Length: 382
Image 1 (cartoon, rainbow, N blue to C red):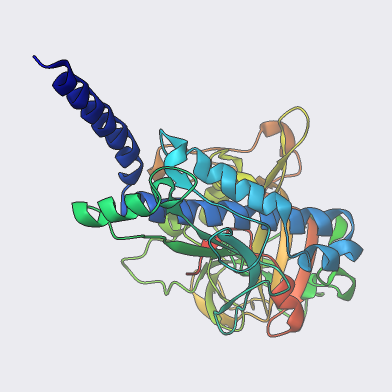
Image 2: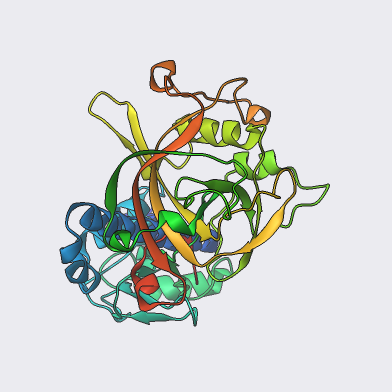
C-alpha cells in the first residue's frame, strides 16, 4: 500500500478523532443548561440571603452597605460553585463573569433588585435581592472547544438549539413559611426590622383569648394554612408535613385555627427537629445541638375566644422574622405520614407544652422596608 495514502488516511483519522472529542462539548442537553442556570441562580440568591441575615443578626447598622453592594462576591462564587459540579465534565458548561451587571459575551451573571410589587428584575438595581445567571456550552466559546465551528456543527446536527444560552433569575422575596400566625401585640416598636430583638425566651400559647378580659396577647398565636382554603380534601397535617413553598401573604386574608388538641404543634415540632427539613434556616451550637429555627410568620389581629376548632380568616398586617428556640408537646410524634417523625430532646421540655421564641423582628406590609426584608427561601422568579 502506498505510504503516502497511509499517511493521508492517518492524518484524516486524527482530525476526525480530535473533532469527535471537541464535538463532545456540544452534547450538553438544553435541559442541562436550563437546570444549571436555575441551580446556579438559586445558590447565588441563597448566599445573598445568608449575607443579609448575618448582617442584621450582628449589626443592623451595616445593612445598607450590604444591600448596595453591586458585586456581591460571595453570591457570585456560590453560583459558580453550584454549577461546576452539575456535569461529569465540568468544562461542558461555563458561566463567564467580570463582576458586571450587564449580560455580555464576557459576563453571564448579574445581581440586582427584584421588585415584589411589579415582579420585575433590574440588573444592578438596589437593594440587591436577586441574581441572574446565563449558561452556555463551552463548545460555543471561542476560547474553549470549537467556537463558531461548534455552533455550526450543533446547528447541522439538529440535536441542540443553535447558540442556546438560557437565563434564570432567583430572588429572596419576603414570604411567609410558618404555619403559625402571631398576634400583632408581639411586635413591639423596638423590634422593627432591621432591628432584631433578643428577648427572654417567651412561651407562646394557642388558647382562646378575649380582648375584653385578658391582657395584651403578645404570647398568643394561632395555627394557619396560610392562603390554602381548608376543605374536606385538604388535611392540615399534610399541609404542614409536606413543607410547601412559602406564600406571599402580606396584606391578604389567611385561614387560622386554634387547635386545642395540639395536633398541629406535634407536626411543627417534628419539622423543627427533623435535620433534613429547612436546614439552612436552623442554627446549631458547637456540639451540634439545635438552638433555633428561623421562620417568617404572618402577623394578624389576635384570635378571639370564639375561635376553637373552626377556621377563620384574618388579614395579615405584618411579617415577623422569629427564631423558635424549642417546641415541646406531649404525646405521639407528628408528621407520621412521612415515615420520619421527630420529637424534641426530653431535656429541653421541663417547662411543659409550648412553642418558645427568643428572637423577633417585624415589618409592616406595604412599606419600603418590606423591599429590604429577605425571604428565607430563594425562589425562581424568571
